[in-house]
Image (cartoon, rainbow over all chains, first blue to last red; front, side, top):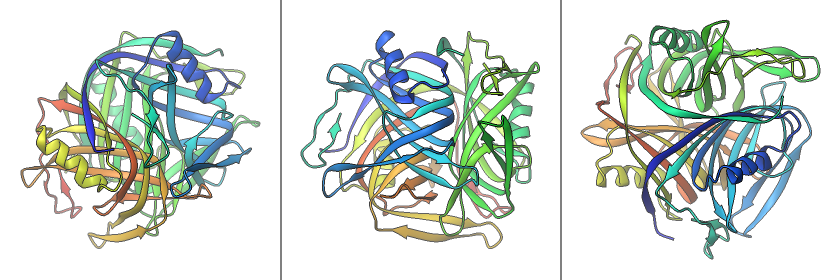
Length: 142
Length: 142
Length: 142
């Protein structure tokens, strides 16, 4: 797909924390569903008890799943909310740091368990971001 | 503590740079104190001369301090301002890259010395984020 | 240069995606030139086919260029737009994750090729960020 930009209006801003033991991805999606947030920018600072994440094999068009059961700090985070199958979908990538400061990172999956997480959600108004299959990349893109 | 979100109003936006040799955490907190910023989202792009950071031991409820005296690029950053002991407190996690591109990351501490740093502070209005001790995690949370 | 902050007004917000095969830095700068975005906060989530990045040698005042021709996820990103030589200039640092989750990071250069990239640009109004040579660091700073 070609490069494309949409102009958005600033929407609502939400700041919150996630319960210890909750699923990072599901908990943010649940909140967005409840408050009808369908397009937003999301950032998280905190730590996880374990992480499920992935690397996308660009040639094979499939996600390679990775995991760590060690506690990690969230040392970097970029995320957004769009609609996938008519529901708010969190697309998030994170960098995670361990007890020695060593880092790993990738595309966050369900199964990433929160120890503590402070979340910022900045809604984007006047845009409709709907994920649809993209043949060239094999991804669901807007 | 359970998951909880607050709706905030967009407040002031500040963009700035930090002096070479200044303490990254203290300098941002000093600015926020001066301008009475008590809730905000913060990001930084730049490089440090040395870093003091930490990993939180989730079982033992204590920070394990880490440090590097090598120059690093700030390759990822997530941060926020809230009130702790009645003063603006910067909670920031960062990923740092060295001359080979290798990265480390964690919770930034005082003692992280700026080489160059470009800072964005987006204030959150109509919310009060006050850090208080949380027994379950051992952290000061809002 | 001493610490300095400017108060900005919230400007336009743009959300977009970059074409597969495009140059991450050039494509964002081209869009900003076209829409006359001269000061902004930028974040990206996505993956790259290859990356050109750099580490700044703080003592020698020169960039050490690094590169990887392996596919990577963008696991962390901080960026901004300012004016350099009268044109929108993207200053961006990123953390990149490989198939094993291992990360590298630094200052992004032209030559970083997009596989998929979702971009948020938040314009800063009422400020003029113009990069000029800074003798102390050897960098072009605002």
